[in-house]
Length: 195
Image (cartoon, rainbow, N blue to C red):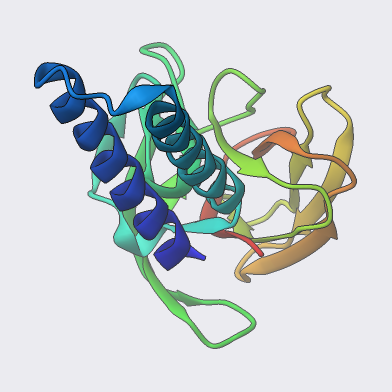
């Protein structure tokens, strides 16, 4: 799906450059050719949009440090934070998920989140499955990570016991922006996969 996104972006760039060239040289070749070029740009843009929803974010792929404002990642994912409610990408101790993947880093939410801070937002198409690997930051307390849709409806709740990477998954009923955050105190997100 990522290959389709790249190809559609390349096609869009090509057709936009072609339109600018024709316009610059005053050789639009008639209304019919212009319509074809605009149709090609629109089609490649639709392909790029349609392919954009599927994606993932892994803490292993991020740079360590403090995030104090909304930060865009690949595949339309964003880490939402503010100066008062930061998120940290920090070192993990090789924590392992259900598939045996080890994480040397984690997204440390540093406390209770919402759809505006201390959360990760991401695009989802209807029917896609959201899979989240997370953990509590407490050595004694089970904490819950929630995933909500753009209307704030709870789509997924993942209780995470101390010392384990918890996994939860849910199928999206509608398209839109979804948000993952702790419903209480600090938690770690290792990976979010939309497929």
